[in-house]
Length: 181
Image (cartoon, rainbow, N blue to C red; front, side, top):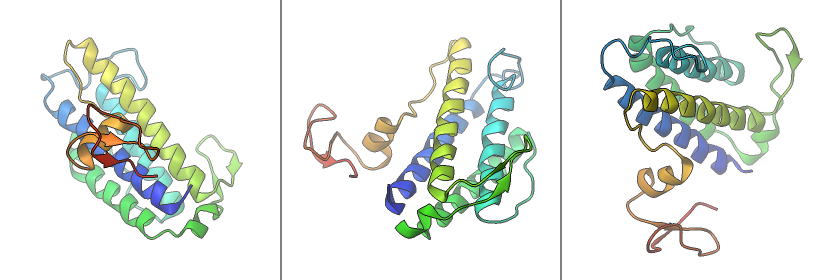
């Protein structure tokens, strides 16, 4: 894993969360807080949990920020800024920084000392899990959620058209671009 890999994955996570926020904004009134029995009770609850996780991990690696509120307004106004902070943070990392230990006490009361690399990968993985849950909630409403998987990011957000893997294998109908290696 390199600093460049973490930069790419943080950008993917921000992009995927923004895709989902756009879909959530377009939902019919009342659906944000409707109990679904999945994850953190509702679409809004799960989206707020995602933002909270981005916040708490950022405060552990980079410094204090105001605690987020579990509201749609807070998500719309503050989450993009937090995602940009994450991008600036990882942009400042060297490969050597990835092993830096970050000691903290968890909200469950245990002490831990993960590396910067482990924290960033956890953050991205955690976001993928909960975005998938929100997408399931949106599907329950009979609405098609946006594509937010990593390959979709490679194929759309990083440039137009299909891509190839680092070994030259086609990842789309025709191969014109290469995936980051």
